[in-house]
Amino acid sequence: MIEIVSAAACVACDVCVKVCPTDVFERGEDGIPVIARQSDCQTCFMCEAYCPVDALYVSPVSAPVGADSPHADEGAVTRAGLLGGYREMVGWGRGRTAGALLDRNPVLKAVPPLQESRLPSPAPLADSPWNHLID
Ligand code: SF4
Ligand code: SF4
Image (cartoon, rainbow, N blue to C red):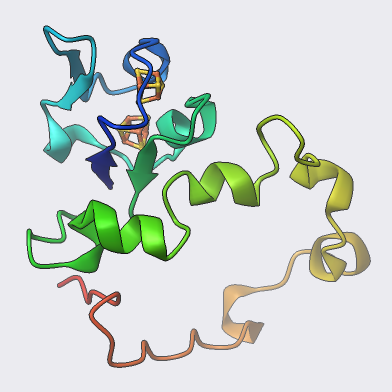
């Protein structure tokens, strides 16, 4: 879910406001987008992927994390290299290699689709302030 718009990094281009499929943002008077309807966020990462200056952070948690979470702390997210981290991971942005060119996923290329019951259970989340269990 969208958690952070970095006013320090944002260049007020409006791209995130336009690409969001659920109209989460409002343009602020200074041009910096405001997260106006966080509960409408679908955690699709599109805003972060399209932000040209890596000024956004979409948490992988599909619910608001709360103000005391590092996912909502711009300093913690920046220090962890996660501001715009999804965009970097998929290889969007100047000087990066598009993730599609690097994809070596052996599951997708080597085997037919598996029944869900044959897939391993997800690993339990470690006890960390970055991990949030959703009811
Ligand atoms: S993650 Fe998707 S739904 Fe959520 S604010 Fe960004 S573009 Fe909108
Ligand atoms: S896409 Fe990035 S730079 Fe453009 S308005 Fe949104 S946060 Fe600011």
